[in-house]
Image (cartoon, rainbow, N blue to C red; front, side):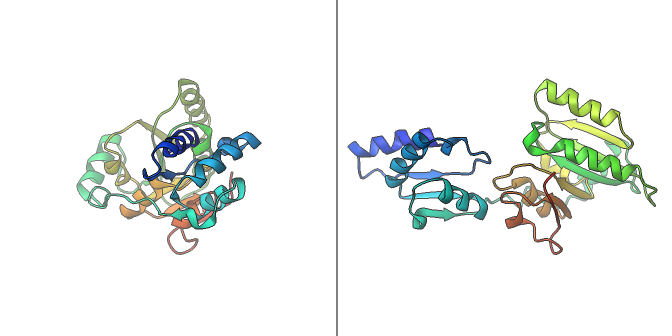
Length: 233
């Protein structure tokens, strides 16, 4: 599942050539092929691999552009989700909005993800504040599901407190599928994204999407058809 593990497995194949080797690659960052030594290591490991699986077109093209590997070995298999888990649930919607004290008229924008900069939760908060500052026909609220390091949590909390509009931090939730049902719109402003599984989860719950045009996201969201894509940042 990462370059070092692939390299170790490739060395094992020297002694056991019948052992099949499958590599999965969906990192959103590029540190594993940054140096020439990394590329040489990856070239050896890829030569010993039967296939390298990526989740998106962008990650496939990235791996091919950064490494010495046969294109025929690069296989794209989009991630799947359990659609019996992620589905519209009217009861969950009512219960969660009652729990949060949000009435039926309020339009709830939802964001799900960890708090590190790569997921862009800060961008969603800033965009929501610009929206909340307008004269709107209905009230709006932002609900953020997720957590992160204390310094990032403090930064985002302060950011939310310093602007208009109600922002609810729901924290990390194991029942995230229920929380999608509390939303009316799903926003995902990732700065880097290898695939974007939360988008597929939101769509399965019946939510319209607003997302950044980065990484594998355009594989999932067709602009103007299944959601809206916006420029990064």
